[in-house]
Image (cartoon, rainbow, N blue to C red; front, side, top):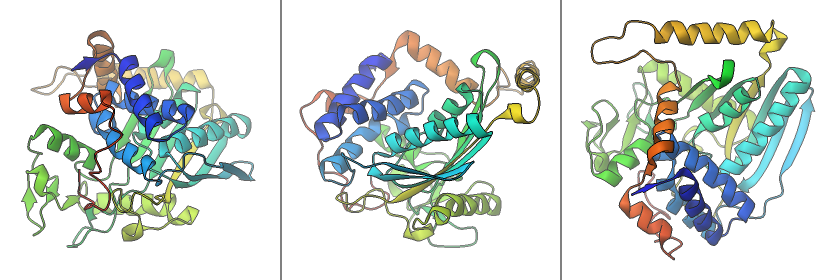
Length: 349
């Protein structure tokens, strides 16, 4: 099924509102999800709606939160999300970070007590669109075997960067600290397709390509990815007084309770280091030089982060966004959720 981005966003917002979110918050969450689907990151798009709807409907997402933002210094602050929808909290906290960075040159905003916030590129792109450099990182479910270990401890712990360029040609980079991210394994499950080798291990610790047998994920580059995931957990969790490591709440455990997650936004003004035009020209030159580079066999062009997703977004804008039939049928149905996620394994889906 192919839908326009507007049609998809409306269907998702309607379902989330029916589950219990205010219309304003439902629209905000749907905007992030539609952004992900429009860039081909379906693991963070419409396929997540039923899970969010079940958690909202069961009380694990606060539908009437009291947000608190405390400026702890000229360039620092803490945003308490009161366990509201993570997408809403992360967006509002980024708005505060952008305002602070424009005024004082930089902002480091610790975010506490929020739910899953989805695609980090959405938030750092907002910083780039404001002419600022944005960095965001967050903790997630314990799904990753530490280097040399045999038990899950850290999450996929993603980090994203948004760097402003000329005429909207920003560099936007978002990655998890595992070889493959859990959302993409969920997507493979939904389509019953295998995952690549080296992404995950089964219950016995052996590598598997069957998305239904995944019991733990593997960190990128061995010890390096493990170390990066640890630092992200410290800066987005321990720094803001949130549970850390294996103590981070599972996405699927007890959907009646808030997840109490942590996140960190870092935003700063490149114009405080030199002429903004010189900076953006350097970004433009970088993009041009890389694009003009001779590609390796099997590639049509060498691209910078964010370019391939921008091309997909343009194609989807023209042809519509392809949504799995089962997900579309759920979105147009009267059912809020099918009670499939509560108290399931952290590798449910």
